[in-house]
Image (cartoon, rainbow, N blue to C red; front, side, top):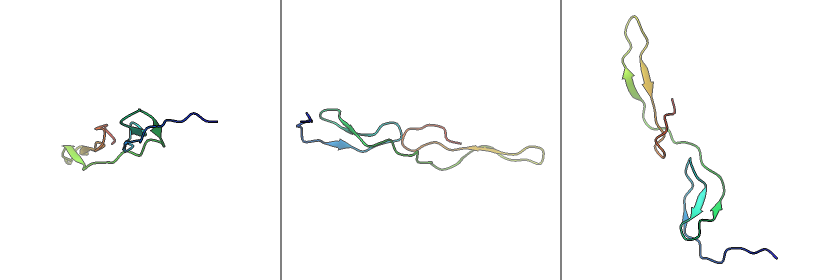
Length: 66
């Protein structure tokens, strides 16, 4: 017989850094989700002599993606 958790789980949705987790008992389920890319931010404008640069961050965790 398996000994499972008897709580009525209240799940917090999975993010790019953690799977779905119960806020009552800490049990996890599933896997992490993919990052969600935010809008591109221009770091430097392109010119005739050099290309421009841009970056984007994950809207869930803030990690630099590109």
